[in-house]
Length: 336
Image (cartoon, rainbow, N blue to C red; front, side, top):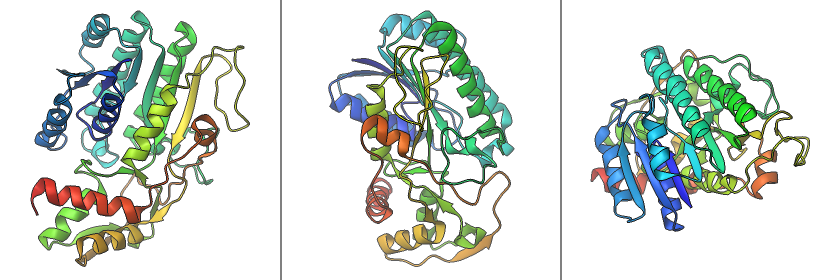
């Protein structure tokens, strides 16, 4: 297939593109190389992908008017996976404009491009942060998500809503998926595992929020991109032409649209994650205990019923396997 991946120099976009290329697909990767974190890491990811003859790298920001429309007219993708976004919960308190530009206007430009050049399936990355102030666990896709706690979460909810309207109006088969704390090799430097590793190796203290009692549904990146790839083969049917897979299904009654969690459904305490990291590094961490920052939640826990029904599996790599794999990559990449 011909596949367009936005955010291909990002953590998840890189891993997904690599998987698609290994399967023999032609991948066009678009990335804006924002300076939110180390651009050198992003360029190293794209350089890895460029070793494959089936990869075409395009540099540009998704919010640029007409860029995506022209790119899709030229490359005629059958599948579009939209991963490009301004990420980060806490950064949205510092630079809200970046979220309006990338997550709102960028997603609008993408939807307009797909409207002009229809595809077999449009897949969109959302976030577990969209569940916001929900307190009932696990988070189910059928739960109402009307209380976002940060602009990041609000911008992703807005993207989901815009995508549903385009799916309804223009019969675009669309799947939006909510990620749960993705980690692994080539990860994002702003995330806890990456930050903790660097500080522990440098002999510096780490900041531990909520006394280490906060829980996250950690999802290993290769499990996540495997789920995306499998979901790509399951486009939602047009209204009246398909049957929901069960009571857990979010298949829209008015559009070929579905919302799916991608997580393992096994929350892990932050202090257990730190213990696994200490074991992998062979070093103890000095801790500075702090309260949860504004916008953070105490626990995330994905319901995996719908994902299991759609693709027959859920993310399964435990942190005891995933964290040592990340540490091996980190030591090799940074030479420490």
